[in-house]
Length: 113
Length: 108
Image 1 (cartoon, chains in turn blue, brown):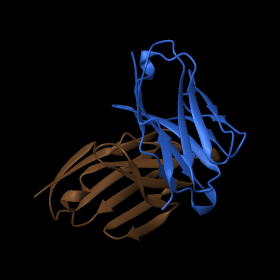
Image 2 (cartoon, one colour):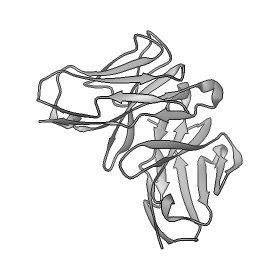
Image 3 (cartoon, rainbow over the protein chains, first blue to last red):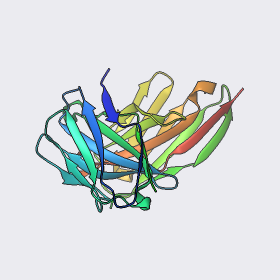
Image 4 (cartoon, each protein chain N blue to C red):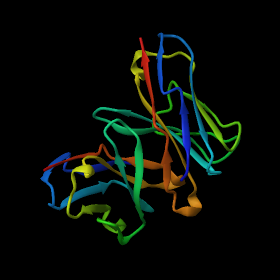
């Protein structure tokens, strides 16, 4: 079974601080995604990547950066965290060649105080 | 942007009853995918369906991309089916856009 690992599982940050959420996949998938999930909004796409060195803006990229240094790793960076970024963040990987079935990590619960 | 609407938002069934979940989307999609989210958070891919009907176990997915709609049928529901079911459309550039989910509660 494909594996996507997120770290940390829980994070408390202060307003204005820098936060980095990490994601590692052992599936050798080309595509990776960062979503946030909030009550009333469902899952919203922040950034995604087609492979090492590529990042693309999703539907709600403002306030976030992404980095894909390798096939396995995809990070989400909040340079100046704000309370509105308090959410649960999910990373996913997928391989378009297999019908883009996505595999999700367990999520990171971020609280910005 | 791409929009996905799911209905109903919540559904309560007794064990053994069937569930029908609907998904409508606002723009061109190459496929629909259905996910299950366990209470507590992690998501599991159930079915990926570009068009027509697909079956796996007690699940049947029907996608009519030209009409921008799809559905997920769960037959003979079980208590362990309780959770949230999310529909996602795959649009341009392999981006998935999700609906807000349908919360299913199955009682004994």
